[in-house]
Amino acid sequence: MNYRLSYYNVGKIKVSIIFLHIIISRTIGLSVSPLTNPQIRNNLITNHSFTIKESYSMVQAKKDEVRKEIEYAALKVFYEKGFVDAKMSDIANEINISVGNIYTYFKNKKDLFYAVVPPDLVDYLKKVLVDTIHFDNQNLFEAEADSERKSALLQEQVDVLRKYRNQIVIIFEKNKGTIYTNAKNELVETMIETKK
Image (cartoon, rainbow, N blue to C red):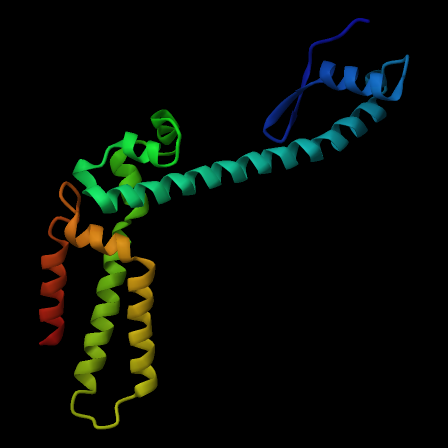
């Protein structure tokens, strides 16, 4: 048999026409190449592209899962050791992968750190705190404060503390070498300014 080396782009994967030809010819027992008939060829490629695209999305899902595992391990290591003392090898060892695999997903340790402890988290914490202080200031002298609103604000604070507990500790206590070095003082200043 004479095979012509040509490829078809199916999604983001190149599929060799030879591969398709061999598999299909042997599977359906054709003596004539199905690839010489354009109608059959296009039908085969269309049918196979679904399977290939499906495989691509499974690979992408696995990549997303690995990235989340790296972020979870990094958060644990940064929480335990702080930014400066944490090593990429500590993070890799936490989930039994190579250090090089981490660099597939993150440019460097700082990039990984800010992925798990994002700067907008500090802004969100300030917002929750300022909203609570404003509410308290407005209702300080009222006997019947809006208990539903106060309850909602308190619940939001509890939710924030539960969800971001480790990040908050990192921001305020294990921040050496990061943009959060002065975060605690800035938050106190925000509280004082808001209370005035």
